[in-house]
Length: 189
Image (cartoon, rainbow, N blue to C red):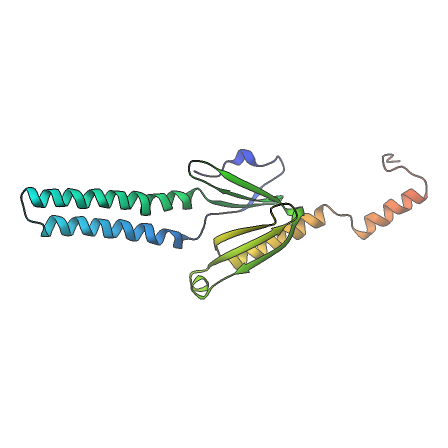
């Protein structure tokens, strides 16, 4: 369930690869622990015989359903949700059976903001909202671990990408001087 490297372009490299914060796993772990506790309590407290055995099977069946629904499924959702930051774009991917992927080129990112509630500040996570030019506008990344550092890194990536793909003052003066002298942009001499 790792993120496939073949979706990256030739010169692209991963800067950050994140899953949602581990707090998403608290409920699945609690469900598993409570189910095991209920089975042990049923095994110890229920009477021997047909009635106790049937009740224990009922508890086990209900526990299995709860573990699959409230334990395994949230874990799979957490594991298959990827927040990937590269030197060219931000990729958001989610989905267990079907897959949704959204690419946000760094050149189209207009704004990014983070939000942390008090408990999220204590746990070190938060929500990152990325606004980009295009039809879909905002992308909300929930439960981003170390959201403050991620927002800073995103800012650095956007600025570095902008600086790499824009002309500096010296380069612009040189091009304008060459044009004034009648040199073609394609003619290196």
